[in-house]
Image (cartoon, protein in one colour):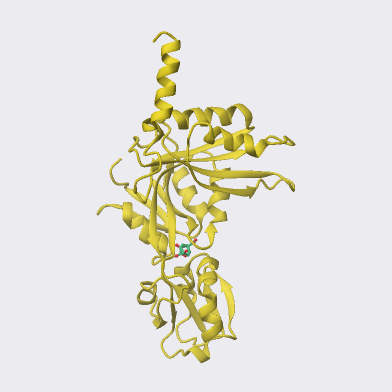
Length: 307
Ligand SMILES: O=C(O)C(=O)C[C@]1(C(=O)O)C=C[C@@H](O)C=C1
């Protein structure tokens, strides 16, 4: 698939997710705004969109729980790519609003967390109402309400008839959010040498050393992990699932063997996909097939087998 025919994204128009979706959209791709991460994944499963683009991780705030949990519970979806978007936040409001007149600030919790310091200094007596996205916040500000303001991406002000009261109010000017391209499960994109494999792993109940055993599957095969994050399974206290990103592709022997190792001891391993890494920078292993120690061990084994 070169460019998808349609992409469902966390909308409305003007979100950072839309910016990420535009990175993989072609001229003829239909961009379909939806209200939540699960609606975006539903669109892929019911065929109303070929791909979904959803946020997975912010460089400051960490993982997006809604996406991690949806990926753990939806069957039939797979990650095909990742995209990075620099996130800068503007404070916007109806014309005539001043910083002093603002009482309510609408925005997504991730955007709020990053703008809190600025707000404390400049709009100290506001209350925050969380919204499903930053653009949803801009859309919520009612024309003429000078007690309301929204924090959203710079482009959202123009889309919703608002004016910018302050630009770039986020705490960290280098902040980025990582987004996933999700489609129906199928063959992964071919290996590029700069790939990532994502899995979700559950540990067996009451197994001392279970966490170590999980990590050993990667360590013993020289596989570098770029992220590991736990989320509660949700049925009772004390049960967690681990969201893991490993460097390499399913076609790399080391990754394949690590996944088989996980499958042998874990009650549940979900393969979320092998896909090209967004940063495309030189990775530690450049794909594990080119790890010399691993290759020489494999050759040695083959020689023992008489091959
Ligand atoms: O609200 C948006 O604009 C989004 O695209 C969602 C989202 C997120 O879920 O983290 C994405 C980027 C920003 O970090 C803030 C919000």
